[in-house]
Amino acid sequence: MEIVENKSQTRKMQLSGGATFIISLPKNWIDELKIKAGENVTIVKNSNQSLTLFPINRNEQDKKSTAIIYTTQKDSGESIKRKIIATYLAGYKTIKITTKGMRIFSEHSSSIRQLVRSKMIGTEIVESSSETMSIQILTRLPELSFETALKRMYLMANNMVRESIEALEEAEKEHADEVANMDDEVDRFSLYMRRNLVLAVGNESILQDMGLKKPSDCLGYRTIVSRIERIADHASLIAKRVKFMEGKIDPKIISKIKKLSENALDVFEKSITSVQEHDFEKAENVAQKVTQIINDEKQIMNKINENEKNSSVIRFALEDLRRIAEYSSDIAEVAIDDNIQNIILEE
Image 1 (cartoon, helix red, strand yellow):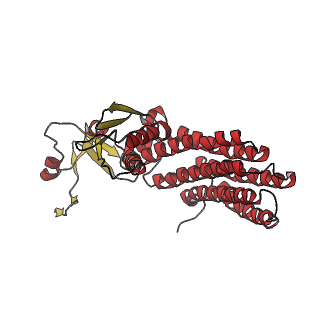
Image 2 (image 1 turned 135 degrees about the vertical axis):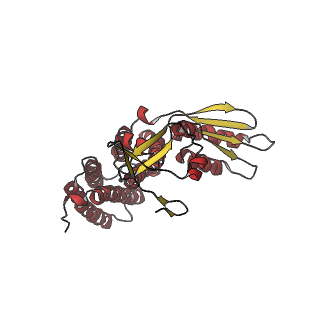
């Protein structure tokens, strides 16, 4: 008996020859997919106990997909950049920015070039005229694996925090500027990884290449990528405030700040390790240590005199370090959620 629904049908599985199973497929579905009799199709066994069937040339079609963004004189450079980033994250291989019978504003052209250079890994402007600019995404997943990109992103953010505190201690503005500029590189990896996660949700082969087990893993990793990016943002904020300092911070206070930063970086490192090693206990320890860091931050903050030289810079730096620890706790929670099955018993 056949149960017909809009997008699902129930069909009986038949055994052929003792070693092969056969199932019939609705003709209208096959017609919509433009598959002809005798053509090969690809069947993928998914990690969620389902099967996916698609034309064997589907991957090649996806690689050729193009998104066209029309711009007008009303659009700002930032608005166009947001649209480009959105299409990049959506997985398009080519992004074409064009106008309807007018020149692309120089402001828009500059914004697009700056975005490609500073934020988008493996992209090139392959066409540029008065009315059209085309961005080609050249990087393929195997060239830069998700695990490698995540590790690089973590190390860059970790280094940014360390160097921002060094710049704060030295009151060295040039060093601080270098740290702040490193944020662009973290953003590049963030966009690259978020793009791959979007692609992996609907493509089992990409999911496997990335080393993830099931599509739902992409949700957790998107949280991790976002939190690492935010940690880098707070390191950049610490560095940017160095230019507002009046001389060096009192050695006793800077010593406390350095200690707090070391503790924040320790939980940051352990949170990443807990995810990589699927370690529930280590993730639990991170959550407990973050609570202590928050308490330490409050105690230091309460002892800062409003009349203290650079008091506002000190307070903001302490708050940034607390937020770094809190974001590390968010990363650890992903490990806790993903590995809860390892410590519970089911009836």
